[in-house]
Structure formats: C-alpha cells, structure tokens
Length: 291
Image (cartoon, rainbow, N blue to C red; front, side, top):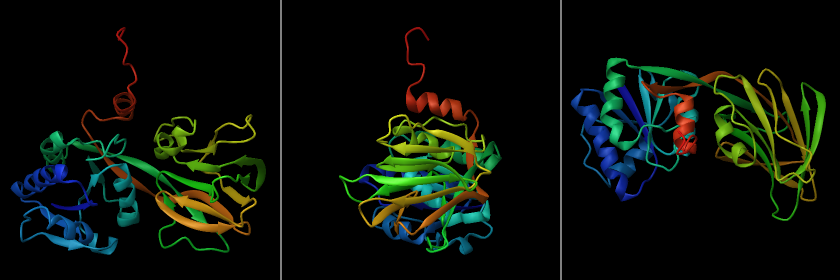
C-alpha cells in the first residue's frame, strides 16, 4: 500500500500528531510519499524515516492508494488541485479548528490507519464547480470544492452581480458579493452568510448573496446540471473572484460560466462517520438537556 501525505506549516504543538501518523504508517509497512513543500518543513520538526519519498504534482501520485491531508479544512481543499481527476481517496486528519472535512481527530489516528489497512471505510463522492470565461484563464485547475465567490475589491463599495441560469436572466444582486457553493461548501462561507445546509449527495448548488442591499433577496438552490453565468459591475473597475482559496482579478467585461465539474473528489468516511454525525458534533445540534 502507498499513502501520500499533504500538509502545511503547523505549530509545534501538532508535531506529535504528525509523528504519530508517520509511525502508524511505518509500523504497517506502508510506503509513504510526502509533498515536497511539506517534507521540507517536516524535516525541521521531526526525524523522518530515510526511505520516505516526495512528490510535487498529481502525475507523481500514480499507484497511490490514499492521500492523507494533515491540517484543517483549508488544507484538505488544497488537495483537490493535487489529486485532480485521479479519484485517489482523501482522508483528513484535523489539526485545525472545526473540521467539517478533516474529521479524524489526532487521538483517532491509529484507528483510522487500521481501518484503511483493513478496508473498513467507504468513500463519499463530492461534486466540484468548474469555472470558465471566454476572455480569461483561471489557471490549470479552475475547479472549486467549496465555492466560487464574486466580491467587491473596495471596502466601501457594493458590487452589482447579474446572474443567469441556463442563459435565462435570474436576478441582479446589489451586495458585497455572491457565493456559488457546492453541497460541500454549504457548511462554509455560504452558511456564514445565511445559506442553507445541503446534503453532500443532493446534486445542487446554492447561490448566496453576501450582505445584499436588496433585502428581499434570499439564498437560492438550483440543480448542479444548470449553467450559472455571472457578470459584475460597479464603481470600481475590477472585482475579486475566489475559487476556494485561490484569488483572481476580473473586470466588468468578464462573464463567468459555472458548471458541474466532469469529475468528483472522493473523501474517506470511516465507520460511524456520516454527514449527520458531523453536523451534530461540529454545530452542537441537540445540545439540550431534554435530549
């Protein structure tokens, strides 16, 4: 078995978590690959086995059984651009805060690796959004696992976003911006702006305005088989467009076309882990003495 590790810089308090993870893999004879940037950081914090190899891109992950993300949800989001359409299952070890996606706690690492070794897991297939424009490129991975957000760049200025669904005019949003979220992203930025929580397998996307000036505008759920077209205008000549954690500058001449990506990301779900358990635990649902 071959497992790849991806992560970012962490505080010293999490060094023990990574050490436990590496030890659990080594004791089971699992071949380990570490992303080269993460590896450069790890060697300053830990004593790593000499036979650990490194990788820098998705092409070097051929034959990899799993990728383990070490960090928070933001770190796991970055793995989508690493594994791309390879369908390598991703397991998140949470050293962050809330951890909707990275839901393996440090104290459960041993149990999680044992489950991977014995095949005691399922995969949760998550949809992504693809972003296109006839006038602008958004890199070699224009896909969002959480959301695409169109925002104003100037703090005291609204942005006007014209939205079309399947080339039919839907609405104009006067707001700080507009979020187009996947079901995975429905518990992220969209939720903080009043959007609904959507089941991961619902095949929907959510359009959530950010601080709308027209208060009768509300979040809207559509099928992910639809094409969403967006165009922004306002006092400022340029606007900010985020694809998850990646930012791009666009202008009023740019029309964005958002569709469902032709591939999905597979997240590892261990026994006892499901969407409702995660929501209850992370959001405190049911914390009532009557329950």
